Image (cartoon, rainbow, N blue to C red; front, side):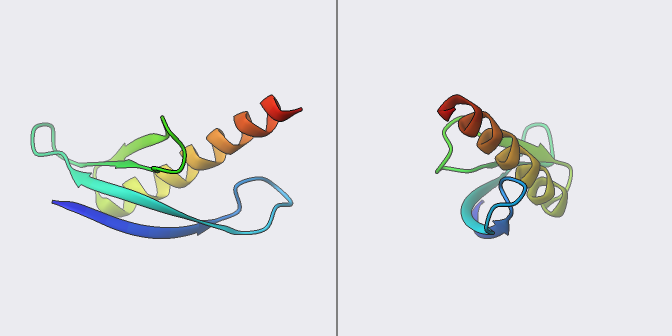
Length: 73
């Protein structure tokens, strides 16, 4: 079952809090949950629980935003 959540995080230190839509799918084959952020292609994570997956995608979003920011310099 696919679920959608909006999460608010500080994507970069000193930045304003931003809202990102994430999509969570239960991994029926391996267990746990897979999560992605459609606004950031290639930004994916996973977790054993839905809560863990949501925390992990926050870290992944921050990492993606840091790379984007570095490339913009």
